[in-house]
Length: 228
Picture (cartoon, one colour):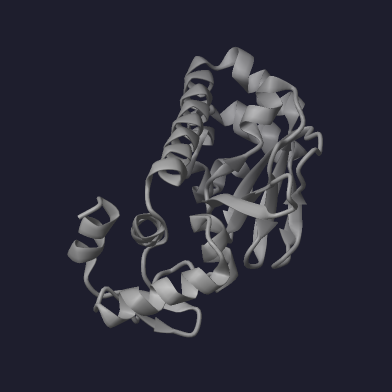
Protein backbone atom coordinates (compact mmCIF):
# COMPACT_ATOMS: atom_id res chain seq x y z
CA UNK A 1 0.00 0.00 0.00
CA UNK A 2 1.52 3.31 -1.10
CA UNK A 3 2.07 6.19 1.29
CA UNK A 4 -0.48 9.03 1.08
CA UNK A 5 2.19 11.67 0.44
CA UNK A 6 3.32 9.74 -2.65
CA UNK A 7 -0.12 8.66 -3.88
CA UNK A 8 -1.21 10.38 -7.11
CA UNK A 9 -4.88 9.61 -6.36
CA UNK A 10 -5.01 12.30 -3.66
CA UNK A 11 -4.54 14.94 -6.38
CA UNK A 12 -8.16 14.35 -7.43
CA UNK A 13 -9.77 15.10 -4.04
CA UNK A 14 -9.66 17.41 -1.03
CA UNK A 15 -6.67 15.43 0.22
CA UNK A 16 -4.48 17.48 -2.13
CA UNK A 17 -4.76 20.43 0.30
CA UNK A 18 -3.23 18.53 3.21
CA UNK A 19 0.33 19.29 4.29
CA UNK A 20 3.05 16.65 4.48
CA UNK A 21 2.66 16.13 8.22
CA UNK A 22 -1.07 15.42 7.87
CA UNK A 23 -0.44 13.02 5.00
CA UNK A 24 2.21 11.11 6.92
CA UNK A 25 -0.11 10.81 9.92
CA UNK A 26 -3.03 9.63 7.78
CA UNK A 27 -0.80 7.20 5.91
CA UNK A 28 0.18 5.56 9.19
CA UNK A 29 -3.48 5.11 10.25
CA UNK A 30 -5.27 4.27 6.99
CA UNK A 31 -6.38 0.77 6.07
CA UNK A 32 -6.26 -0.40 2.47
CA UNK A 33 -8.24 -3.33 1.11
CA UNK A 34 -9.89 -4.83 -1.97
CA UNK A 35 -13.62 -4.75 -2.64
CA UNK A 36 -14.80 -7.36 -5.14
CA UNK A 37 -17.39 -6.65 -7.82
CA UNK A 38 -20.88 -6.78 -6.30
CA UNK A 39 -19.69 -6.28 -2.72
CA UNK A 40 -20.72 -3.32 -0.58
CA UNK A 41 -18.23 -0.77 0.72
CA UNK A 42 -20.98 0.28 3.12
CA UNK A 43 -24.75 -0.06 3.27
CA UNK A 44 -27.63 2.32 3.88
CA UNK A 45 -28.19 2.92 7.61
CA UNK A 46 -24.62 2.06 8.57
CA UNK A 47 -22.59 4.34 10.84
CA UNK A 48 -19.19 5.29 9.40
CA UNK A 49 -16.16 6.03 11.56
CA UNK A 50 -14.19 7.58 8.72
CA UNK A 51 -14.03 8.20 4.99
CA UNK A 52 -13.12 6.04 2.01
CA UNK A 53 -10.67 7.13 -0.67
CA UNK A 54 -11.16 5.31 -3.98
CA UNK A 55 -7.76 4.22 -5.30
CA UNK A 56 -8.96 2.06 -8.20
CA UNK A 57 -12.35 1.01 -9.62
CA UNK A 58 -15.91 2.29 -9.73
CA UNK A 59 -18.88 1.89 -7.40
CA UNK A 60 -22.51 2.94 -7.54
CA UNK A 61 -24.40 4.79 -4.83
CA UNK A 62 -27.92 3.43 -4.47
CA UNK A 63 -31.03 4.30 -2.46
CA UNK A 64 -33.67 1.75 -1.48
CA UNK A 65 -37.20 3.05 -2.00
CA UNK A 66 -40.25 2.13 0.08
CA UNK A 67 -41.35 -0.40 -2.54
CA UNK A 68 -38.01 -2.20 -2.28
CA UNK A 69 -36.63 -0.93 -5.58
CA UNK A 70 -32.99 0.16 -5.67
CA UNK A 71 -32.41 3.54 -7.37
CA UNK A 72 -28.91 4.41 -8.59
CA UNK A 73 -28.03 7.96 -7.53
CA UNK A 74 -24.53 8.38 -8.94
CA UNK A 75 -21.24 6.66 -9.65
CA UNK A 76 -18.02 7.10 -7.70
CA UNK A 77 -14.66 6.72 -9.42
CA UNK A 78 -10.92 6.79 -8.76
CA UNK A 79 -9.87 9.74 -6.61
CA UNK A 80 -13.29 10.38 -5.05
CA UNK A 81 -13.91 10.44 -1.30
CA UNK A 82 -16.89 8.68 0.25
CA UNK A 83 -18.48 9.48 3.60
CA UNK A 84 -17.55 13.15 4.09
CA UNK A 85 -21.10 14.42 4.55
CA UNK A 86 -22.01 11.58 6.90
CA UNK A 87 -18.89 12.12 8.95
CA UNK A 88 -19.42 15.88 9.28
CA UNK A 89 -23.10 15.41 10.14
CA UNK A 90 -22.34 12.57 12.56
CA UNK A 91 -25.21 10.59 11.06
CA UNK A 92 -25.74 7.21 9.44
CA UNK A 93 -25.31 6.92 5.68
CA UNK A 94 -28.48 7.22 3.60
CA UNK A 95 -27.02 5.44 0.57
CA UNK A 96 -25.30 2.15 -0.16
CA UNK A 97 -22.00 1.97 -2.07
CA UNK A 98 -21.74 -1.15 -4.24
CA UNK A 99 -18.69 -2.03 -6.37
CA UNK A 100 -19.49 -2.54 -10.06
CA UNK A 101 -15.95 -3.78 -10.67
CA UNK A 102 -13.07 -4.88 -8.44
CA UNK A 103 -11.86 -1.91 -6.40
CA UNK A 104 -8.95 -0.80 -4.23
CA UNK A 105 -10.00 1.55 -1.41
CA UNK A 106 -8.35 3.18 1.57
CA UNK A 107 -10.25 3.78 4.81
CA UNK A 108 -9.14 6.86 6.77
CA UNK A 109 -10.33 7.07 10.41
CA UNK A 110 -12.61 9.95 11.37
CA UNK A 111 -10.24 11.26 14.05
CA UNK A 112 -7.49 11.89 11.51
CA UNK A 113 -9.79 13.60 9.01
CA UNK A 114 -11.40 15.78 11.69
CA UNK A 115 -7.99 16.77 13.05
CA UNK A 116 -7.02 18.12 9.63
CA UNK A 117 -10.48 19.67 9.22
CA UNK A 118 -10.04 21.73 12.40
CA UNK A 119 -6.41 22.76 11.84
CA UNK A 120 -6.06 23.18 8.06
CA UNK A 121 -8.27 25.99 6.61
CA UNK A 122 -7.52 24.99 3.01
CA UNK A 123 -8.65 21.43 3.68
CA UNK A 124 -11.76 22.68 5.49
CA UNK A 125 -12.69 24.92 2.56
CA UNK A 126 -12.09 22.14 0.04
CA UNK A 127 -14.20 19.62 1.98
CA UNK A 128 -17.10 22.07 2.33
CA UNK A 129 -16.95 22.85 -1.39
CA UNK A 130 -16.99 19.14 -2.17
CA UNK A 131 -20.04 18.57 0.03
CA UNK A 132 -21.81 21.57 -1.55
CA UNK A 133 -21.05 20.22 -5.04
CA UNK A 134 -22.58 16.87 -4.04
CA UNK A 135 -25.74 18.64 -2.83
CA UNK A 136 -25.94 20.67 -6.05
CA UNK A 137 -25.58 17.49 -8.09
CA UNK A 138 -28.33 15.86 -6.01
CA UNK A 139 -30.63 18.83 -6.67
CA UNK A 140 -29.99 18.58 -10.41
CA UNK A 141 -30.70 14.86 -10.30
CA UNK A 142 -34.06 15.46 -8.60
CA UNK A 143 -35.03 18.08 -11.20
CA UNK A 144 -34.04 15.80 -14.09
CA UNK A 145 -36.03 12.89 -12.69
CA UNK A 146 -39.08 15.08 -12.10
CA UNK A 147 -39.11 17.16 -15.28
CA UNK A 148 -37.22 15.43 -18.08
CA UNK A 149 -38.86 12.70 -20.18
CA UNK A 150 -37.07 9.37 -19.89
CA UNK A 151 -35.43 9.58 -23.35
CA UNK A 152 -33.90 12.93 -22.46
CA UNK A 153 -32.63 11.49 -19.18
CA UNK A 154 -31.03 8.56 -20.97
CA UNK A 155 -29.32 10.86 -23.48
CA UNK A 156 -28.04 13.05 -20.62
CA UNK A 157 -26.62 10.12 -18.67
CA UNK A 158 -24.87 8.62 -21.72
CA UNK A 159 -23.16 11.97 -22.29
CA UNK A 160 -22.24 12.18 -18.59
CA UNK A 161 -20.77 8.68 -18.72
CA UNK A 162 -18.53 9.75 -21.59
CA UNK A 163 -17.45 12.95 -19.83
CA UNK A 164 -16.77 11.28 -16.48
CA UNK A 165 -15.29 7.95 -17.56
CA UNK A 166 -14.06 8.54 -21.09
CA UNK A 167 -13.81 5.93 -23.84
CA UNK A 168 -11.79 2.77 -24.37
CA UNK A 169 -9.46 2.14 -27.31
CA UNK A 170 -12.39 1.20 -29.55
CA UNK A 171 -14.43 4.28 -28.72
CA UNK A 172 -16.89 2.57 -26.37
CA UNK A 173 -17.80 4.19 -23.07
CA UNK A 174 -15.26 3.52 -20.35
CA UNK A 175 -18.07 2.70 -17.91
CA UNK A 176 -19.70 -0.65 -18.71
CA UNK A 177 -23.05 -1.25 -17.04
CA UNK A 178 -25.74 -3.84 -17.30
CA UNK A 179 -29.04 -2.79 -18.82
CA UNK A 180 -30.57 -3.15 -15.34
CA UNK A 181 -28.02 -0.71 -13.90
CA UNK A 182 -28.61 1.88 -16.63
CA UNK A 183 -32.36 1.53 -16.16
CA UNK A 184 -31.88 2.07 -12.42
CA UNK A 185 -29.90 5.23 -13.07
CA UNK A 186 -32.41 6.62 -15.58
CA UNK A 187 -35.40 5.58 -13.48
CA UNK A 188 -37.26 3.29 -15.86
CA UNK A 189 -38.02 -0.40 -16.40
CA UNK A 190 -35.27 -2.53 -17.94
CA UNK A 191 -37.53 -3.50 -20.86
CA UNK A 192 -38.20 0.18 -21.64
CA UNK A 193 -34.48 0.96 -21.43
CA UNK A 194 -33.66 -1.79 -23.92
CA UNK A 195 -36.24 -0.44 -26.38
CA UNK A 196 -34.86 3.09 -26.05
CA UNK A 197 -31.30 1.93 -26.68
CA UNK A 198 -32.51 0.07 -29.76
CA UNK A 199 -34.27 3.23 -30.93
CA UNK A 200 -31.13 5.32 -30.35
CA UNK A 201 -29.15 2.77 -32.34
CA UNK A 202 -31.59 2.81 -35.26
CA UNK A 203 -31.34 6.62 -35.35
CA UNK A 204 -27.56 6.44 -35.50
CA UNK A 205 -26.98 8.05 -32.11
CA UNK A 206 -25.16 5.07 -30.58
CA UNK A 207 -23.80 1.61 -31.34
CA UNK A 208 -24.00 -1.31 -28.93
CA UNK A 209 -21.97 -4.48 -28.51
CA UNK A 210 -23.09 -6.56 -25.57
CA UNK A 211 -22.91 -4.27 -22.53
CA UNK A 212 -20.72 -1.82 -24.42
CA UNK A 213 -22.09 1.43 -25.83
CA UNK A 214 -20.43 3.80 -28.28
CA UNK A 215 -21.75 7.29 -28.93
CA UNK A 216 -21.72 7.86 -32.69
CA UNK A 217 -23.60 11.17 -32.97
CA UNK A 218 -22.78 13.24 -29.92
CA UNK A 219 -24.31 16.46 -31.28
CA UNK A 220 -27.71 14.85 -31.90
CA UNK A 221 -27.57 13.15 -28.52
CA UNK A 222 -26.89 16.53 -26.87
CA UNK A 223 -29.85 18.10 -28.64
CA UNK A 224 -32.07 15.23 -27.53
CA UNK A 225 -30.87 15.62 -23.92
CA UNK A 226 -31.94 19.29 -24.09
CA UNK A 227 -35.40 18.46 -25.43
CA UNK A 228 -34.87 19.20 -29.11
